[in-house]
Length: 338
Image 1 (spheres, rainbow, N blue to C red):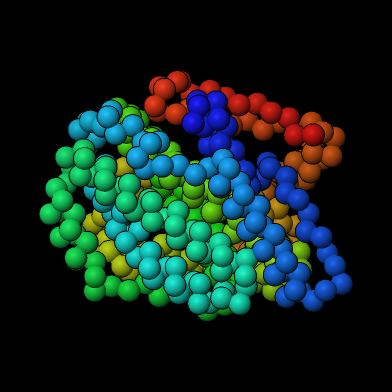
Image 2 (cartoon, rainbow, N blue to C red; image 1 turned 45 degrees about the vertical axis):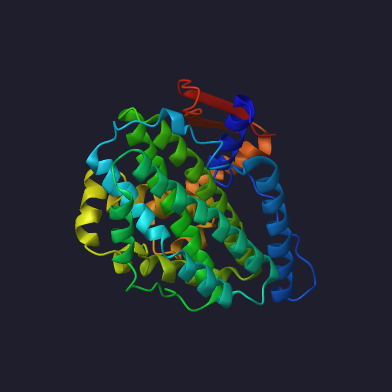
């Protein structure tokens, strides 16, 4: 994969689906809501799979600069990587329980199978970095994994629509985690770990965008019910690690103190951006539980964006760190959306 192609791939994955990226409108038909939703998800999955196969698939062996691995990362960084890897250990629970819930939806069930494949790479590559960097031995990794075997992840919500709201929020939060940790790895001079986290974050952003588009489809077909589900999920949202990982309070404190994730990051980098990315109306924003001031601010921002898009003048400014393999400096990408 050449430098230009890789930069374009990751740039697209990290920006697509955000509030400044216009979506294709849902084609409303005379079919039932359930039928329209199923058609949407299957077509969305086909587009997702085609893009992933042609542009985003990465190889643990060939796209990670293992020859450049160092021991410069701090123990704090190693603890965070170990903690994130532990969350990935429950992949069998995530995949089969969500797939059982959405089994009647061809598009969503196929996406979950693909999601499981991509997430399995995350678990493997994080463990490989821990061992190859010398931060953990093979025996230490195995012992930690054994300590997790008594826990089992359970679905936090019962309905398919509530679960897609949950996975939308959770995938953005996970992407934020990996992006913040990547910045820490770069500051510590760990080129290899930064590259690992760069690809993983791109995957998580693609997952978020798929789920976000699904929630927007539900919004167009059943706005009142979907807004209620969004509020319910936000009111009861927790990341899966809290109930699964031994001594998570201590690990969570380390992660928060490192600036990777915590309540402030969640509010500023997850909850607020998710709501902005859904492009809700003022009335719908009020139904999500936001304060009046937040509703006014987000709605005014969306009005300005829509007007700029209408006039063809909206500019998207995105700072993207290019591939650690080539050690290019960060650059600002400026593009105008027609």
